[in-house]
Structures are given as C-alpha cells and as structure tokens.
Image 1 (cartoon, rainbow, N blue to C red):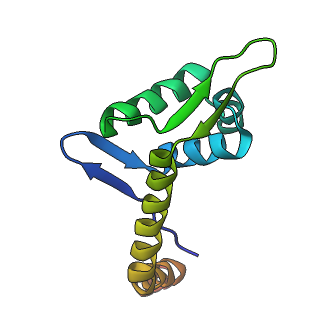
Image 2: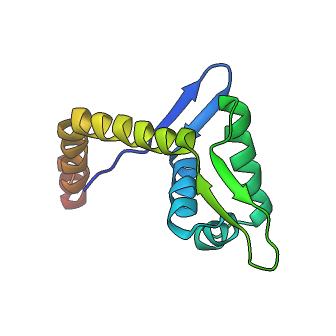
Length: 123
C-alpha cells in the first residue's frame, strides 16, 4: 500500500517532517530524550539539537526536560509539543485521504508489466 511522506515548510522558520514528529512521539512515550534517541538510532546530541531547533522555530519549548541526577531526569512534551504533533498528524491524515486514490493508481501502474517490453522480448 502506498504511503505519503510529508514535510511542511514553515517560512521563514524551517521545516517540520516525520522525523521530528516521530522524535516528539518517542519522547512522549519514553519520558526521555535519551531513550527516544536510542529507539530512533540517533545520538542524544542529534535528538537534543532537533528539539532545540523546534524550540527556535516556534519561539517556545516543545519539550520540558528535567536534568538527570540521583533520581534521573526525564522529559515530556509541552502543550506546544503536543499541539505540534497533533496538527502535523492531522495534516498528514488529510493529505493521505485526499491523495489515496491517486497513490493507489500509481501503485497499480507499477505492478503492471509493460506491453512494449514483452513484445520486444518476443522479437
């Protein structure tokens, strides 16, 4: 089944795509930037940089991170982070619904053998 990969360009601030949204969802699920980074196969620094990039884009934090220590740290999404995930997923769902018929048609074309290739093979 075909799928859609969506990147939203927010001029002039930057771009939001599935990678950043997946990271936020992993942070929400694990309660940790470090655990989310491990789950996604990226370094903690890369995850932190992406979180900071989103903070700069929106002018407010998307993650509330608590420094580790004796009891460990933790992280959770802020209201802005939750709203960002929700709105991105809503746009993604609407775009998928709108384009599904066309994506299915393209997929069907890929599955069909080309007539000209089969006639060339017989010659």
